[in-house]
Image (cartoon, rainbow, N blue to C red; front, side, top):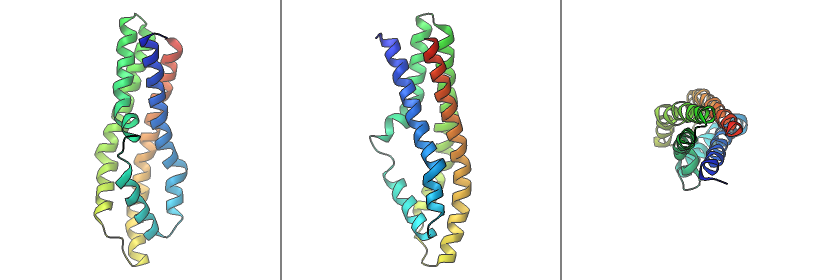
Length: 161
């Protein structure tokens, strides 16, 4: 397999990994946290946020747009314009809808939640969680859609490569 094809496959894999990460939150993790005592939910989310930036997460979250763009550039250099366009579009969609959105909205929300002491009172914890979870989930839904579109675009690009 050529470097260009290998890069396109890796880029598609990265896009799939980050889509799966966001999708898991969208369809199970947050619903599970919403279903438990809000003190437990706050504590669990704080724990998740404390460990999520790790070597396994880094490539999919941070490198996906770079690898998608690299695949697009390599494909363009080989004259495979249709495929290149799909990969470049995938890079842009994920960069804006995944990485930038996360940095602008979800990370500040996570940091604010992380600075809080878990309330002892059930009512106080419920108020904190109800102010956090629906908004966080809305923006997670948007980044899930964006990363899913990026994956779709990469898959189309891969088929055209």
